[in-house]
Length: 152
Image (tube, rainbow, N blue to C red; front, side, top):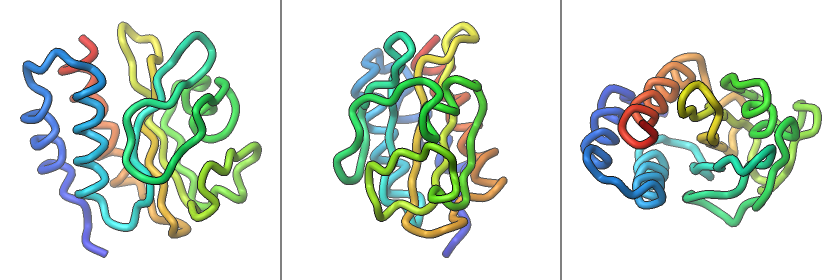
């Protein structure tokens, strides 16, 4: 598997969304970009906050859970604890929500507006241990771009 060029991914994302005022369209394009650029993934998309609930937003992959409470599963944990959660084996994660039983590893990065969590970027892989610390840093940089370009 080739290493993801997060510099390229981030620049591509910025060029797609710069000056475009449409949240859903931007998130749809970013999920498509991630899905096409990252190897060995089976889901890439967003959940957006509505109160203490995450609601399915734009994504690429199989159908997904529509609502996830804050604090439940990998996405809900990332939102509630306001931190990136990288899980090498989702079957070992307490309270994991199996939207797609083929998923084995997952990374979730919170999105912010004004310091408040407004959603998460969620990426799944069918391979155990797919996501690494370089993936964490690269995706956190991508989310920083989204926060600056879309949510500010």
